[in-house]
Image (cartoon, rainbow, N blue to C red; front, side, top):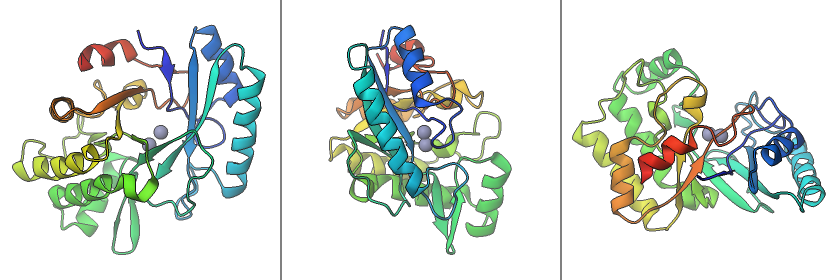
Length: 249
Ligand SMILES: [Zn+2]
Ligand SMILES: [Zn+2]
């Protein structure tokens, strides 16, 4: 079983545990590798991300833990770089590139804050047409490598976060399919790694990971490389990895 996790949030951004607490927990769980990936600074929405000063403190702290626990576990310094972050991610072991906003009419519309907010944004800026929103979402996802220097693509179809309880997108619509395929093809050409992200399961929004099974099988058929990501904001390291690994195999 895969027992290493590289998508983890801490108190430096919107997580509930300090990096050191999580390193100790990881050692206790027998993990051999752990990577931190707190949220990059987004000046237009500061509630969940690291500030620029905090980012330096984060780098220092992860560096300290790397050394302190080097004989027990390999600690990595990563970042979850949002598409609309301005600060270039320098000095990290790896970068997870993620789209958390769709920009329209000069506004940054959060993709994953809440179902009502998402519906509201679509009606205010996309004429109430979820498909138009989806097209813009996947257009930016397709640009993640160029824009963020991503080594790993975070939660490819995050826009479906609320879809199990509140189906908003017709994911079988050929135009929806062509929007995600265009993004997938562009990223496949860069040989980037795709996440199988179980974070929304841990938080009770979904029963299956991102991306959906049809996307996953398309990526797999086209030679994608994958990584299991817990996207943990608490003590939920490697959450549901057994099930995610089975799904992938
Ligand atoms: Zn994310
Ligand atoms: Zn995350």
